[in-house]
Image (cartoon, rainbow, N blue to C red; front, side):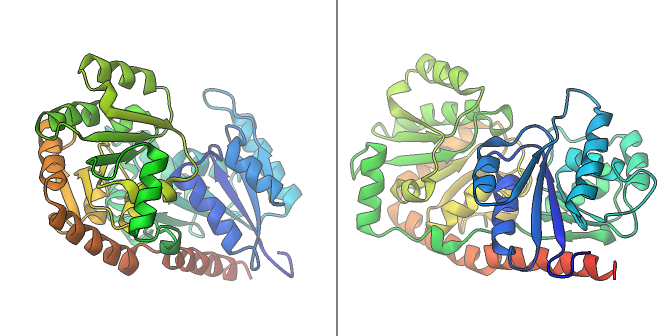
Length: 377
């Protein structure tokens, strides 16, 4: 182990701007005075990887091929030796799998496996349960971003509940301040809507797990009751064209603002009256936390960790996955009640400060790093 700073290797799919990847990047920046960090990417560097490399972090593309690529495990093992990595922090299951396989029959370096979310439908596979007994060594640790995710690791991966630590995702509340009138006006100017336009916002990649189809169908119902309402969709992905076609088919294309991927969400959120998330599965959604930081009330599906984040009828409303009528009813109830929106938004901000701050999250990971590295001494 290096005498000045131990070296931690983050293992990820790709350093794109998504929850797990942003978390890893922010964690490295925050703890750079205590640890050296190397980023090991299975499936390409990505835009965030390029940014981190420009800041001086080592970013390695492992070049995984489709299917089970045994060569990736060898390249990862070589990177561990070459870079002097003392601890691997694997984000999500596939990076954990390759990290564990790269050790062969040994247990070095130890691995912190962090699960950020689950696929839908989530099923137990006996082969994987048995494999996990071999892959996870006594020196390894497991963390989950929420209670729902932790329970899934036990139920479907066969990992003992006693070795899983819940570390909730968190954000910097100062980066998402409550909007004042000038901030709201500026955000709406950027979005292109007037001060009195009822505005719903969803920030999510266009992917089946985010279920934009249900969001758009729900919003079609909203426009029948709130004719001037607009839906601002921020994100990109393979499903975007299909969602644009659906909105045209439903006759609400002019009500929807497709704004693409943005790096200024913090400046746009203050313009929203309600934040929506229509996913069929979630871990602990960072976008929900960002809305809470901005004191925007939430309408979301009651899936995964959403119920851990949103206190029903206090900071937002929850509805069943895929139920566009229930989602629409929740949106309408808030869009037509400004006092309720303000109250829910304020309570959401309080909940964020109590439970979901970046400082709290970073301290918990740093504590785990310290415990694992102390065991190597």
